Image (tube, rainbow, N blue to C red):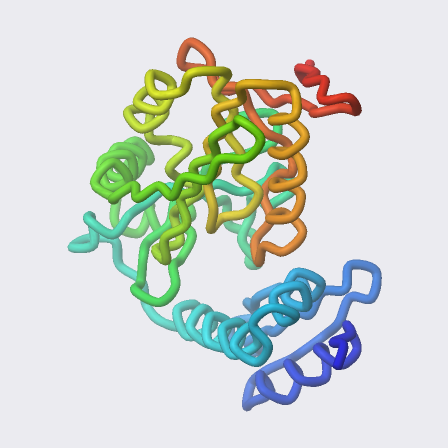
Length: 269
């Protein structure tokens, strides 16, 4: 059996239907939107990555989407307070195409990161999280820098279990926990410096989607091709894609690179 966008659309429409729910489909983007009509807020679901995951995990992939959409919609309708939740504030990485405003027009707390990525901030709610906007800060009279400092501190407290895989003389280290902040760890300067000291060749880093971080110890030309293929595979199958580009890490700075034909890395200007 092969899953199509049309079939997946019908399955999700049936499972996510409910009172005060409006479900629409964007054919150009193959994107389903589930909205709570009372608060006029909702979730956009990109279907192609789910199909890729379904081919490996079958019904579990759909169950997971339904679970997180339901949790996110519930969080949107709940009253959120930051006070007392200081340990649950984390940074999250998104692509530069991700919106800076909420559905209701509020400005989210956003910082520039690289030419490909931005930093947002989230309140972890256990099985989902809520992106922090300026209205939430104003409500409790919090300064943006308070959020930034808390988020950095909490990020450093997360464990960094790395799984190593060696291919054609190159070493690849994967961070793939279930906490939702794998890509965010690219903001952990201590971790990046630790990896910089550890590698024998050139250090490259990829964050193809929010749930994976790849460190690559590139020791020969074929390593670039391998990294590019890995990154693209993760990027096309991730629920929240970030970027298919990789980054050099040098002198405390991240620099996006293109990996061209014949293993030739090109720095992005």
